[in-house]
Amino acid sequence: MSDFFQWDPAKLSLHVPEMDNEHQVLISKMNKVHSLHASGASHANIALALDDLVRYTSKHFADEEAYMERIGFPGLRVHKGVHRQLMDRLADYQRTFQTTRKLPDDLFVFFKMWLSAHICGIDAKYALHAQQAKAG
Ligand SMILES: [Fe+2]
Image (tube, rainbow, N blue to C red; front, side):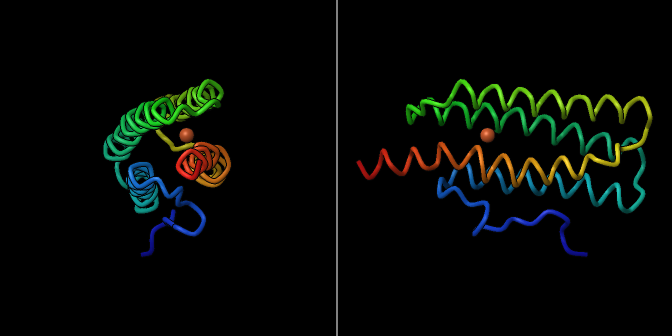
């Protein structure tokens, strides 16, 4: 079975190797949650994969924020706010899953939005800043 979420470098690469690597790990962890869900895995197994994704996301956002700080990205504060919102939504999904024992239907739509809108739209801004800083 092919992966539900694909790493498509033409769309998702920021040309910042450390962040590209982390985004690929993030996608593989989203795929793990999806494949467990699709194969009817137990609540406990899905919960473990979801916990792992939440932990990794928090590490990734911290790394990304440190990177933006390092390159002097002026949009850091706004970007941090967006990360906080994403973490809050993820925590909401996790809570719903714990209470209802079912993954909310729109969780994977949320993941898709995160990958397309956040990485392509929001993360692309610090990548552009890094390129301009290098060129200048
Ligand atoms: Fe980000």
